[in-house]
Structures are given as structure tokens and as C-alpha cells.
Length: 196
Image (cartoon, one colour):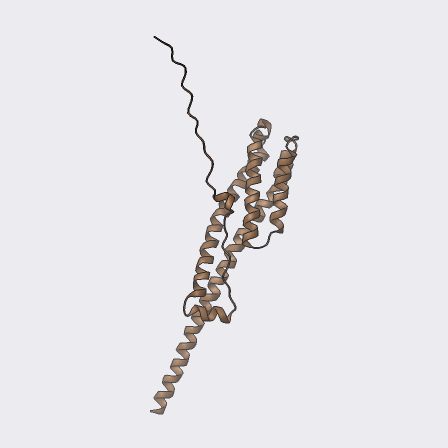
């Protein structure tokens, strides 16, 4: 009888340890997934920001009177490189995207620049990177959502406290980006009628 009680006690300890190890491994897995997804964003954004000096260099020869536009792109790049964390990088990324949109819009006024193969290749590359970054941000937010949910679920909450895990910050779009666009339609004025 004593042997059965001891065996039951040992089996209970082994099951509890295996269960605890499984929960611990799941917590580590979701944490690593968040870090990996953030690193993927940083890699793509680094590629984008590495292309900016090349783009500015190509544009400088054509856009002598557009120094302000080029300076905004350079300033946005510098701000992003100094930003730390999802919120600061989201803000800096939005400023960079706005500056690039402005640059590409101004480039429309320069047919020789638009015809330049280097400019076209860089514009296409940066646009493709923007699309990939948007996809990665969505994956990052999904990973953070899973991680943050686990921090509040039983029994994960106990392990999260032991590991000193805290909720992660989601990648959020700046308020200016979510504002509805101001669209105005003007109806053509009716031509004056002539009497028959």
C-alpha cells in the first residue's frame, strides 16, 4: 500500500513537472515569436532606409528646386534610425512614408527623372518594401496579440509573473493616417440655356 502511495506521488510530481515545462515552453515560444516578427520588420525597414540615400542622390540631379522635399526625406530617415520601440518607429515610419509619397508626387513634374531607370528601379523597390513591411506589421500585431492574451490566461499568468513578462506594445498607425480623406466633388456648372 505504501508503495502505491509513493508511486502515485512520484507520478503526480512527474505529470506536474511535465505540465509546467509545457506551459513554460509555450510562453518562451510566443515571446520568441514576437521578437522574431519585430526583427523581420526591422530588417525590411533597414533595407528601405538603405535605399533612401540612393534615391535622394538620383533625384538631386533633376530636382534642383525641390531641396525642401529631399530634406524632408532625409530628416524622416534620420528620425527613424533614432527611434526605439514600436510606437516611436511607427510614428517615424509614417513620416517616412509621407515624405516618400511627397517625393514621388513631386517627381511627376520631372519627366526626365521619371524616365531615369535608376529612379524607377528605386521607386519600385521602395514601394515593394513598403508592402512587405505592412504585411510584417500585421504579423507582428498578431504575435503580440497572442503573447498579451497568454499573459492574462490561467495558468500562463503565473508563469508570466515568474518570468517577469509584460504586455508588448502593438504597432499602431498614427492618428493622421486614420483620418478620413477630405474628398470634394464639384459638379460642373450648367451651361447657360438659350431660348428657342
